[in-house]
Length: 290
Image 1 (tube, rainbow, N blue to C red):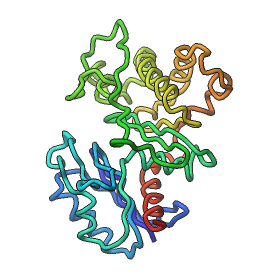
Image 2 (cartoon, rainbow, N blue to C red):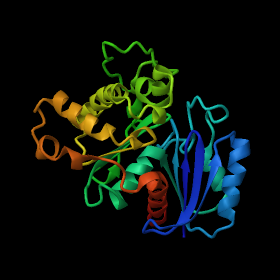
Image 3 (spheres, rainbow, N blue to C red):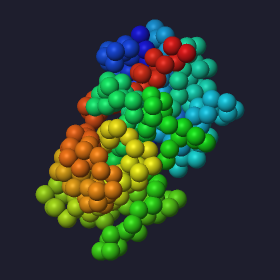
Image 4 (cartoon, rainbow, N blue to C red):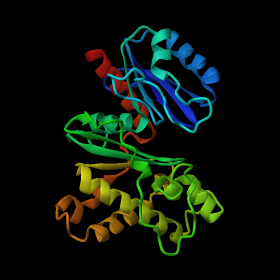
């Protein structure tokens, strides 16, 4: 039995399951302070006999295994979690192999192994919700350099009629700052779910998301792009993003996946809301194999 943690900025999902991705039991906890949340996480796994645990965490985090702070949450604005030794805390409590990465990298791995990108060697998973983040698998390996990708904070061109300044505390009008869920609510005065019939809301959202996808395609060239998160549950967004992306690329990447079959190239997660926790199970599987 494998253990999995999907640690998000608003909720923790903890689960046990097996290596084919089947979830046997799961719980959901609010992300409060480490002192409030982590004892409940540890208690859940102490009730089960797990052979390994995979952790996908909100970030930024340190995923460099040679680093002295590997497994730490680093410069997060989330109160109480800055420089928190997440992995070490789990290891001190549970003596089993563990693998640690970002929540979106875990979701990308889950979709590659068991979801919408199954059978491919690369994919990109982007979540558009309370924040925007993306993870990528390239040639079967999670993308990593100095650190993990922070694709939600790239700069995009502002729409000439958009006066919203952006809410990101670091960059104001980066992609996350102007296209994540809170930006939609602050710009239009209502939550996205209350705006589903207002075409101009989603045209503007697609304007920004398509710019981001263009950059990801030009730099990483993933074989599949999976878009999840609460905002992407507005299904009318997919055709708008696909069309705008084709306009932006303007035939430059002349591949049939983009020019003719884009509805099969940019897709929702096949694992649905379980992409992240299933990916964390796959991280546990990797930890056990290692």
